[in-house]
View 1 (cartoon, rainbow, N blue to C red):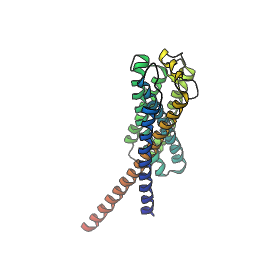
View 2 (cartoon, helix red, strand yellow):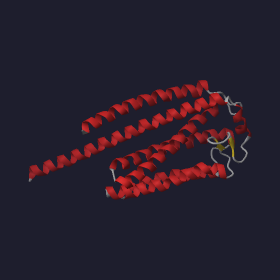
View 3 (tube, rainbow, N blue to C red):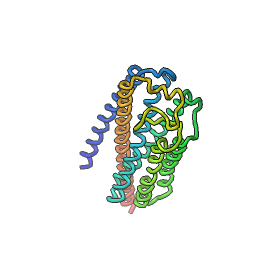
View 4 (spheres, rainbow, N blue to C red):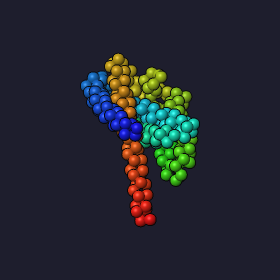
Length: 252
């Protein structure tokens, strides 16, 4: 049964890897050759598609970790702990990508790499909160106890993502509202961001959809690879236990 499950997982990993690779290639073509050029910032605006796509998938990854945490508390199944850990790892990668891309985009838009605005401050808090998740796991040796504490932590940590999402809508912030509002900031935006709406909205929307889909497929591929890696680590651990038991029996 284990070998069948492993074979299915290996097949799923191969399919996901190819799908993600093709999707990323198509997304790059769309971003650099199909998407319209913003007349104020020029080609620098293309970073927008990387920024929004990675930010969206990062939030989804943390939400998946939250669901896995809830299911672990209900079922105490190690697979949910594995999914939670993998999703937080991948979520941190995407959140870092979004932060770096946003910083590069912010330089020509706001003439600075970073501003301690409410949105960016809360994103920093979220990043540090999820990074501390691994410190918590490393401090607890008992596997079951570690899983319970980590599950509760990852559920509570999602509050930082919610706060970062709604901050730009309820607080004065220079960050533009991309989802659920016009391409303008809650504060009134800079002139460069106001010109954002002058783009071909249809092409821009299609490109954003393609890039977000590509990042989503990349998340799935990374998740399956991480789960497969954990299965291999567990198999090696079990093999070590068996070898140790055998050697002890030989010397008994």
